[in-house]
Length: 185
Image 1 (tube, rainbow, N blue to C red):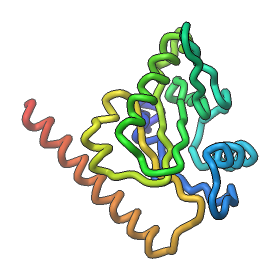
Image 2 (image 1 turned 180 degrees about the vertical axis):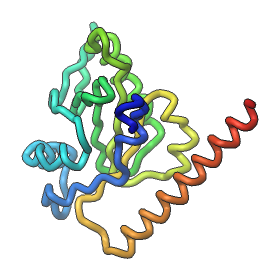
Image 3 (image 1 turned 30 degrees about the horizontal axis):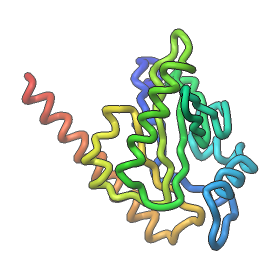
């Protein structure tokens, strides 16, 4: 139904948390180690991201007259018809990550987007996040999603807690949207 009515949106596509238990990283590892492990297991990573993701580039070079920057991973989502920038962060999501991703998305929009494609969107894949920080930054409005990754599957109890929390959040978001629609009517 979503596909037939063209109602697919990034909130329905991106998963949170993202389970990367297949990369087998133990102990201390660097962002480069994480990126290498993801690319060594690209098929599993694409399955975890979801349907219709296509790998485009690693360490995508983005240049201005004075500086080169490198985006960790670049994908294309066929159904959303847009580039998807993925920036890996070892630690907790920080508000300054938003500015970095906004720059990447603007550069991709100006230099890489093809005719008929939607504006690029971004995923900041981090080890942890504070939902309140994410909420205050209103990232959805600029096409940025913050997704927590787990390199090991958590205990069943924690998975159940994530699921229950996701259901409560989804219901609250739905009720908020309903209230906004009622206020407009």
